[in-house]
Image 1 (cartoon, rainbow, N blue to C red):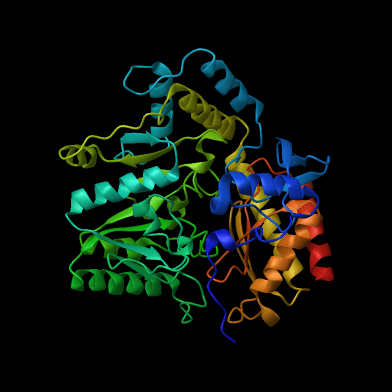
Image 2: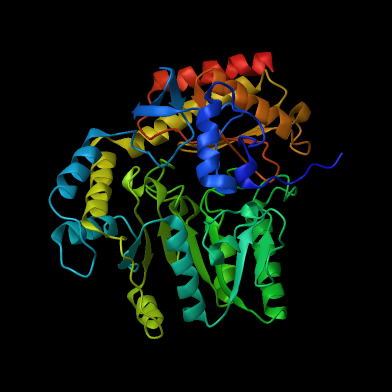
Length: 442
């Protein structure tokens, strides 16, 4: 039986043709305001009213353990970030056309965590904007227009970035200047040499772009392939692939919008685990712990060449309030040891999930790097038999056990687990116990 590919926003999403259960009136109000662009989780959506740390509280007083939302990565409503935003918004909010030390202090603190050669930053409001700008720079620097992405990649929602986000497309085909490669997983490269197999796929894709007359401007990937189902091993996975990209005259864009800012535990950035040096780095989501801030890091000469033809300015990107939020996030990660906690808590969770999988025939693989975890749900532990229906049932069951997670993968059969970096062992145990209960009932 064939299994249909699932669009990313359809995973774990509310069916707008249903009533919405106890929150039906609120659902009706939301749909009347946003129409078909509305995206809500669960068949009975949840009305949230407050949050703290790893927990969110609903209108009815129920508390939910948030193992889904990696935007609030240092914890919901972290007091250090809240105080920094409140202090700065009461003092000054302007754009980057004026000098302001808050902004430059943040930029220098962020640059201290980046490769030395990527010494210029452009700040934006979203990862979509950062990736859009990275694409434009890649085309200018290389003189080419083609892009390579993975089969179920998601990189944002501007027009250009949507075209390189296969998982966002419902009916339209990818344009000719975009070629996909399978993510580096066992089911796609069964001979076991993932790094070599992935590099060969990149080589074939680059040759196809050249044959079509576009050439290769860039290979862009989320450093843990999160939308594809979370693939992070072996260490050094991307080295050969990036070498191939460079041989064809293209750039490697490391999309750190999801894995960046200490989530992987082994490094501050996901690409560090792969031992591949990016030409451009994009970042967003956890950068401001809920305040809109994102950015792009590049070599100065790349910005120089891009700016020869067109000016770039972002009205809200890099404003002092955003910079204050971003700097506070960096301070919290360092002072609270959250990178170490991501490594330790991630290892603990992975071990518990591996143990759970031994007694459950629906888990075929647990893939993790720090607090970025993917659990492959399949029939009879066979990675060749994905079971998206079971995965959806597990996610829905966890919702009623007061735990929130998401889905990923081409078929939506991978449980995507992204706890906040402050997650404690007790909270990890709460999740494991809830998952164990759901698995025994489903």
